[in-house]
Structure formats: C-alpha cells, structure tokens
Image (tube, rainbow, N blue to C red):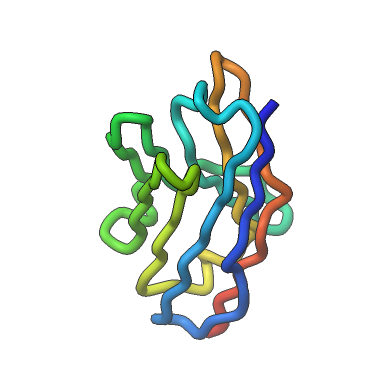
Length: 115
C-alpha cells in the first residue's frame, strides 16, 4: 500500500504561480512512476505531468513550458511547480503513484485560478 497526501493548492490570480507537493508513505521503495493529474468540474481526470524513478518527465501539451514536475526520492516527495497559471488550469489536482502496475491516488488539492 502507498499513501499519498497532496498540499499547496489554493486561489491565485491568472499569471501567478503555485507549488504543489505530494508526500508518499507506505511501500515507497517500489514506487516507479509518479505523476500529477487534474480534474475540472464536469470533465474527466487528465494527465498533467509524469516523472519516472530515474527522473524522466512527460507533460501534457497544455502545460509544457509552464509547469515543472520534480521528485525527491530521499524525502519521498513529488512536486509540481506551476507558473503562468491560466483560468483553465482550475481543477482538483491529484497525485498518483504507480507500483508494480497498480495505481494509487491522493485525495486531491484544489487549484483555483481567477481571471
């Protein structure tokens, strides 16, 4: 089992920045890929960014150049630095961890970007 707890969401004006954090606990030594997903009201959950245990990253086209995912394996943390935020980034952001093909989710943190 892996437990994930997100933090760092909030209300920000368009053009502003936020940094999300996700703390992992449990069977963390077996975590492979970690990522951030978001879900806007009335929409499906979508991938925002992924990072492998080796540090390779992948981003949704909508956030390339604005968001940066990073990982601190020693602290069992994954981060999402979000810059140049847009109103369309408003969503609940979820941390995800993949362990031996199984996916674990946090409860999410709300990001609201005002215009």
